[in-house]
Length: 262
Image (cartoon, rainbow, N blue to C red; front, side):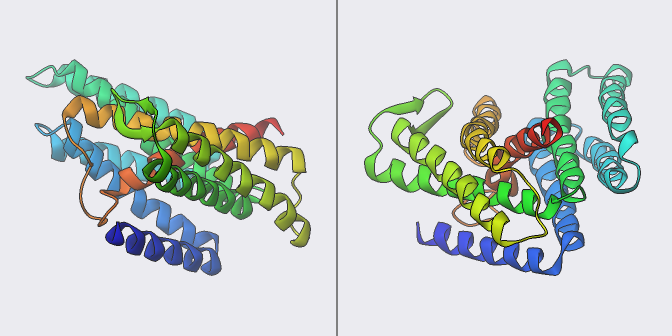
């Protein structure tokens, strides 16, 4: 517990520093997270061809992330190219690991593509505000779900996927995200350079409260398939980078959709 709290505080302080430094510091942070998450994920689902898969997905994913800033129209083309190349690589290999390739395709979407969407959000109108709001809402959701679940959790949420998660914790996490979404309405009124409707921000908080938890469970579902508890142990008390940002990935994709609709 103590390690988890210390690591969480350090990560939060690092986030505040990146926000203060600006969007390019956040861009660099996304690149680091992209590398770390891909490394952890591929080492879990593709141990036999780890190096070649990491080089392919990391190189193409990095190009896709950079293209989100200067050539956003090419993002989807690179996304499609990545899927095709992964299947072509499997067909041309001596061992046809179709199941492993499917897991890699999911990782390609879940990590590389969604982190690319985070860059598209970041460099859009009101992008830094939306980016930070999404991350803070996920932190609130994860934190309340964890502590309320430990203290008051009685009913299992998805015992086959994540035995420790509870319905009580899930409800608390939902309201934590909604609270951040509601608070962002007030903050946007104070920061006169931010022009976002209160309806969008409230809808965003509600959507994050739901989708962040599905993101967490999706990552847990893959871990359960491969019989591991955490993707790595690089972050004391939290596991790996992917264990820390799994909920944020689904939330980012959701905010991207909401931002496009509004």
